[in-house]
Length: 544
Image (cartoon, rainbow, N blue to C red; front, side):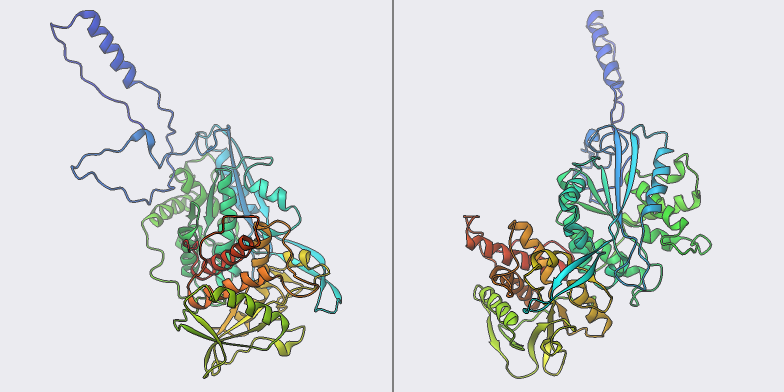
């Protein structure tokens, strides 16, 4: 914040009285100049290292303090309103896990902000429930038989690409609908963060990139689980929330509400059927407030629990200088990097036409690299791959056998083409039951629940398809009435190559974006970038 300038004027007999008065008036006006920077500072970007001047001087420009609130008390776009959208879900993808619902958090944040007399902007805090379900007709196999399945939306990725309301959702995230958002707070399904954190990271990147288009700030809410999930700790949530925000391709900041909850005394950690509890909702809201304004929510006129508010403030401050993880991520998931170093990659598959199509895409990618692809070899060979579905021709599934294969890659079989271009867009998360493995996360979570790790790896065919369709509007998933489009095969091949090796063989972007060559290049790029994000929780580096 700009500080008043202080000057000492020395009288001199050589100076005329009129000149002296003009100078005095000038300096007086300078010292009293209005400072439009608000008194409250944000913590965002405060963790950036400040480098001291080698001469010991403070050369910082106080009028451009990166810690000052943009606009008026958080009103980044300076439209006279402080608009905050909070995303969360009322239903977890896992039946036995309680979702982190954000309605109560949004309500508490609204109360804190509207009771803060320093905030003169109109305050509007909205909660959006990402959970939805819909019955969709699905073709199973090449014979044309159709079934009605109920698909449900839980992940950030499925929320982003859910066909109903897609255009309105994109406009809303970008602040082009009813509200021009200043902040978008992103929560998620705790079960997804616990078991497949790379998929959580991929969804954060998608949503944060859209939020940035509207010049709002994306805030990533570190959650905590209501009940134990797959043996993971609060440190797991800390690590992968911070890895995700640090590795995001746009500016994303973490609000460490989970650390605040963990710092509370036992008597403050209340219990309730809902998640978060009443105290937990206030923890999340107070943490968001402290992150934005660098003050305790106890300074607001709304009094809930000042001790919790002060703990939130202190924890948020301490988190800025804390090391939240070290080294390379080593959590074993169905999207963990395989790190195969051999130049010759040995593979095996059961020989279905879909697998042969994928093989063509993988060969196309590997031909651009300095590696080779060879079928079979002395066991254990590098990998096998196959369909994941247990409800259709289970004999053609991938094989988990550590004595024969170092890794086993499973992909959810494509839907029949009769309605597949539509139904595939719903198939990222879940259809009709926890155990069904015909979706992307259904395949991955089946591997988790059936102890197929560390050998099992999931290939998210539908996640690749929706991104390909986004890049190439109207792109079909098919080349005929059953088999996947050659470019989808290449996206899968690009994904598999990077997942297996950690390498990229993308090459330069073709100049003609209306060409088939560019479409294939884009498919390869989507496969590479998706694999990298899922493996490392960070945006993929440039590859050419």
